[in-house]
Amino acid sequence: MISTLTGHRRAGVLLHPSSLPGAAYCGSLGVEARRFVDLIAEAGLQIWQVLPLGPTHPDRCPYQLISVHAGNPDLIDLQWLVQKHWLSQADANAGDASPEAKRQALNKASRAFFAATSSAATSPMADAYAKFLQQASYWLEDYVRFQAFRDDLNFESWTKWPEALRRCKPDACDAYARQLADQLAALRFRQFVFHCQWNELRHYAKERGILMFGDMPIFVHLESADVWAHQPLFDLDEAGQPNTVTGVPPDYFSAEGQLWGNPQYNWERMENSGFEWWLQRFASAARQFDIVRIDHFRALDAFWEIAADATSARDGRWVPAPGRALLHAVRKHYPELCLVAENLGIISAEVEALRHDFALPGMLILQFAFDGNPDNPYLPHRHSQGDIVYTGTHDNDTALGWFEKLDANMQEHVYCAFNNPAEPMPWMLVHQAMASAACTAIVPWQDFLGLNGQHRMNTPGTREGNWQWRFTWEQVPQDMAERIHLLVESCNRVATDNPSRQTQ
Image 1: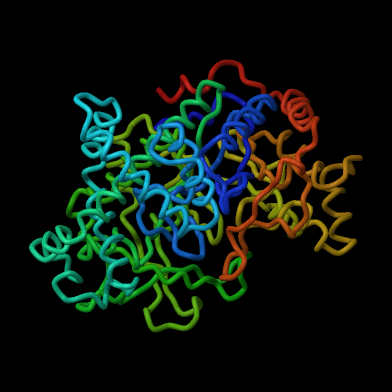
Image 2: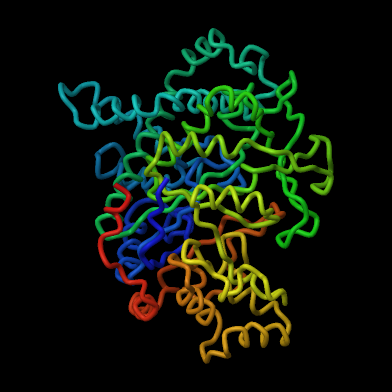
């Protein structure tokens, strides 16, 4: 595992594609995404951190996915389907109104695609589809069956399905799949379209010197194709319910800790299988991204285990995990994959030793630097070249929102820590991130735009109002690219070569 994030000073931006502008109910991988790539390339930025891109539950959280391999159909650009003559403009316009309307539009496009490719003697798109099916064979059928079965059974939890389906028995699943053949074909088509659009966007970005930086959520949702299809790899009882669940003890994100509720892994079985399930996850990540952050990395050393019937995350214990053996397997199979460790929260010396032994960059959050502790690792003078500095992340308030919530004394303390620069917030903190010794600096798009806490993306430990923020082009000053570029240049973060070559 080599890192593309050492040896060159670079800067990037954090923005989930769902936050892109547009007339649709959700941002997409279409023209607005390419416009954003053009803007950040002009600004001298070289990394776009996009977070996970998988299909979400209704809360839209990209860290609680229906599949760890699939793409989110909500991000599909319907205009692309119009250009392929698989969808009318009227149907595309109607499909942008809501998730259900988009599903109907995608079903129409699916029927048109199969009609066109089946009647053609030769078809490049049919060949591309066949290639996609082959490449995705290790996950696609589990995913489309889970989605189709779940939809046909009125979205009832898979733990309440008829026993043969619940236990994922091949004969029962094959018979049910034959009944739902049309639905399965439509679901495969959606994943093919997402695959095509994401690859085109990634290529577009790469041509402009932009690396795509994604996330691998450490845990998976109980209501997912991954748990349903691989039940022995999780700590479940005979009925499919978790024996133990995930979370974290109290920390600076939440005084009560966080009770995530995902089923814990059966690490013994995973290790005995040679970590095949994990290696497939890394294979999918490597196909999507240039850089991959392992979310909640500390769980690879030890995870916080909570009884399934517990009502608080406080009631848990640390349990060792075979992360070292897993990372050795990943290094063996994907030696060129650039990985980053999300090392936030309660981090032990053992976790940091594991990270350093595999030379994984960690994260430095400037908002966490001002607790009065002179040994605080987030203080600028303690930054290391090999790590990534952020003003904040998707889980933090915006830099301006954070600062406005501090009392006057603490606001003064923050400015004193940087020798009282003249710049107002949040650009003062953006400038300090760029000036850091860390080779990589990444800034949430809200902080570049100078937005307050009303534009926060996510508040950990809460369930309402998250993952809905979107920006508009009217919020972007005409000189934004120039202003960012001047800052990037002054902090020696301008590209010295094409960074895309370094992931080859």
